[in-house]
Length: 307
Image (cartoon, rainbow, N blue to C red; front, top):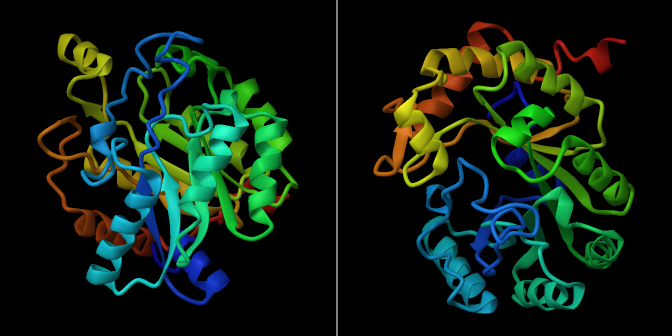
């Protein structure tokens, strides 16, 4: 991401004066749509091997995961300060005291300046927000709510186990507490038109969301969606179609929103579709080129800005 967007890297450098690196940890959580609390089987697209680093394993203690990750990042990138990222599954899906122990264990390393917590909006409450608020008094705290879509028809299709109103309720209890709020969207679900996907940019811009991850739907092996796709293939973004879509979507986003991710890239050995045959650096380059060619930038078509 370059000058045409409000990128996470630029935001963190401006806020902390240097590059901040993420250390991924797996705290061994599950999800309420896996264990039967709201559903079974999890989201139909979910295979955590598509994004979990090999070194991130729940059999290793959190302090050890953090220390091991920091040693690696310091050696490879000469990194100095870090955010611990609780990534796989639902990382507020426990009682407050259990969460307190995990979060503070991850903050024990002197070079850790904050937390990023990936979770679901149906596993947050006032007590958990109070805990995050306490931590935010001394550390950066970002809670990333997996929304995936603002449309209940899509949430039902993917077996999400909560509706859009649940997400809005989570935003309401988290806002104005000193905790940064993030959201995660997947575009390309077969339940939605391109226009409906673009309209999500308008909706997100109207909410007190500070950070956003957006990426294309990927069909991954060993998922229910893979079975559905293999039986009856549905539309997925081609490479150029996604580049064009992304430019239009980002133009409609409020420029205050920090963009953390613009695409996904699952390992080739588990990816079924779409297969773009591009490296991460090639995609980043082509996104930049497309924005430049269209003379586009984040917020240019934001309705909130234009009012």
